[in-house]
Amino acid sequence: MTNWIDIAALEDIAPRGARVIKTAHGCVAIFRTGDDRVYAIDDACPHKKGPLSEGIVHGSAVTCPLHNWVIDLQTGMAQGADEGRVNTYEIKVENGRILLDATRLLARAAA
Image (cartoon, rainbow, N blue to C red; front, side, top):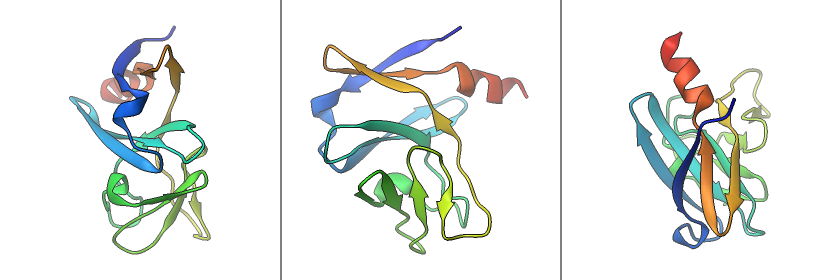
């Protein structure tokens, strides 16, 4: 079962930009790529918890602003690192609005 939350209009996030959604269960970074794909991942880099939403978006990845770790926005995996991963969240765009499935956030809070 999905629990869709309306976050923002697609136009509220610049191409290759990000926005942070603060929830009771943690912060989620919403990214818009240069070709208008939208992704949602945890906002903390697995390396030193750098704010990924402040990083540089390139292709379908973001580079952490603290130590240049590159995180794949599709999988949440750190590229070129032996270990490191952030949670990803299902997201969709309908009628110009960005919707986040909060089911995984709620499940994380229950754990």
